[in-house]
Image (cartoon, rainbow, N blue to C red; front, side, top):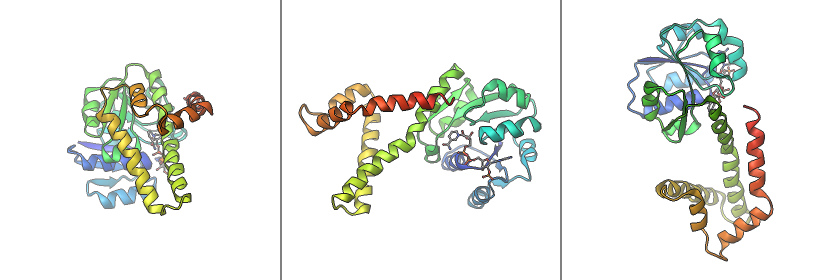
Length: 252
Ligand SMILES: NC(=O)c1ccc[n+]([C@@H]2O[C@H](COP(=O)([O-])OP(=O)(O)OC[C@H]3O[C@@H](n4cnc5c(N)ncnc54)[C@H](OP(=O)(O)O)[C@@H]3O)[C@@H](O)[C@H]2O)c1
């Protein structure tokens, strides 16, 4: 199969990395010349990646076209490009809905997908709307797919994906605190990565327990976890977390 990525940025890089770590059988991947640095890097690293001359050539050469451009660029360029009826269009664009995409591309064959950067290591959730067997089969090789049947629901998942940077910042604060207490920076960072990774992996391993049960099980009454949780609750840390989710949601 020949596929093309319109927009060679962060998410295109991650998806292509994931594809080449998987058993997906791809003949050629066309990437758009922009971003220059990233497309060059990808074509150097992977023999099957070819930089197209321009966006239209990429579309003409590919049977599946992935839209990996920002919404602003999408509004500007999509209507000027010519898509074929049998093209499958897979849009990663956060804020352009299916109807608008159909108007721009004159195609009915459009699926919206939310990949996240760790798709590069074939990990993490991948939200798909609407249901599409072929697209699901493709992304099943790159992470944990979740098909939804209402486009509006995707806004909730877009919103929660805003917690990547805050999650890493919590790790940073933890590690910096250790450093201030005299721990070597590398040791502190490695320790923090292991701690948070083990917590996430354990929560997957214990998926028969609800998250509420996990919270309960990870504290001893009067213990240090109970203390930390109570103090954070008292300081409205989690209320703020919910408020922030509500506020990010307004963008979609
Ligand atoms: N990053 C994520 O984790 C993530 C996850 C899910 C979905 N998405 C969505 O995926 C889309 C891309 O995100 P991103 O993070 O990969 O953004 P990005 O790194 O900024 O990539 C966008 C790419 O589009 C290129 N571009 C700009 N104008 C173009 C044009 N006229 N024709 C072709 N390409 C053009 C940019 O090139 P220049 O650098 O030369 O301008 C850049 O390489 C967004 O809609 C975003 O919402 C992102």
